[in-house]
Length: 238
Image (tube, rainbow, N blue to C red; front, side):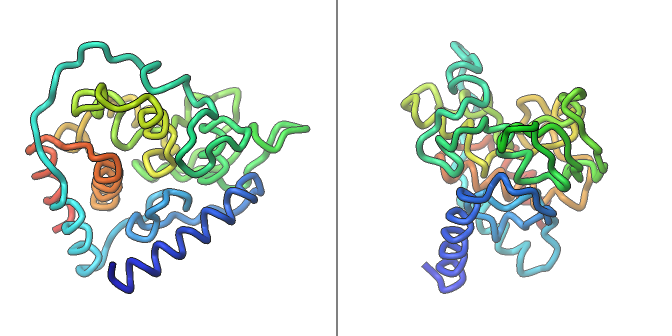
């Protein structure tokens, strides 16, 4: 492990410890680069701009295994656990008493407000959508305006080998903050279960960061990607 990686891991460990205890304290979220956010506990998704950072991102992407899609037989959202239930065991925020969606809204939102009497249920916030750059003044009555995207979609992982995973790994994958970004709902709906060859964020400046985050998740869970996806991912970080 390089000195840079060791520092990142140590910083990540400190961040996890801090956020597990204070995740529900409203704070001004500042988007983090995926290169310095290996735990997924820092908010948002900041662009990767410098030549050296883009080279580092390409190095991450090059490590990905490739294969074609397998069958979609048997896929259902419930194969990854109940929707946003606090039932994961091996990821940050696990078993903290709050639904995963609320954990992510609190992580990425600004001016976060909770339901009276709760330190979990987010009822309003401001979010800068990483995919479009849109600033969203969100209220829970318009819940779908902000959706939490699985960067590597659940259905994508299913077609790449998740049926063979133990249930605990699928639940962790579905609730891992590294794989989750609150985004503008319409952008998430347009993405659906697409890989990078079929869908990229409309905001071009964020695309290298997005595919880097996609690669980080895929490597963590040993998810191969389609050859076409890997090619497109590398092209975003030139």
